[in-house]
Length: 126
Image (cartoon, rainbow, N blue to C red; front, side, top):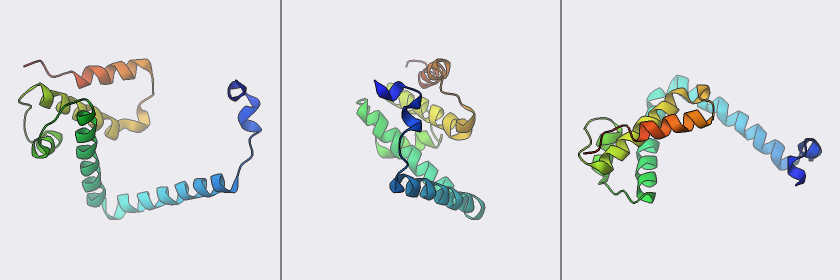
C-alpha cells in the first residue's frame, strides 16, 4: 500500500482548499482564545451542554436510556447514581471530565485506554 511509504505524503500536492482549511483553523483558534478571555462562562455553558449531549447519545447507542433530567444531574454531579445505567453514565462523565481537564497531556497509549475503561467501570455494581 503506497500510503504507508514515507515519501507518500511529501509528494502530495497542497491544494487551495487545504490551505483555506488550515487558515480557518488558525482563525477559529484565535477566536476561541478571545472567548476564553472575554466570556469564559459562555464557553463553560457550551462545554456542559456538549457533555450532557455526548453522555446521552453515547449511552443511548449502548442501549442505556435514562431521563434527560437525571442525565443532567449526574453529569453536573448533583446526584448519586441509583442503578447500573446511571453508574455507567457517571463513569462516562468522569472520563469526559478527565479528558476535558487534561487533554493536552494525555498520550494515546494502550495504558490510557485501559485506565479510561477502568474509570468507566469504577462504580461498584448495585
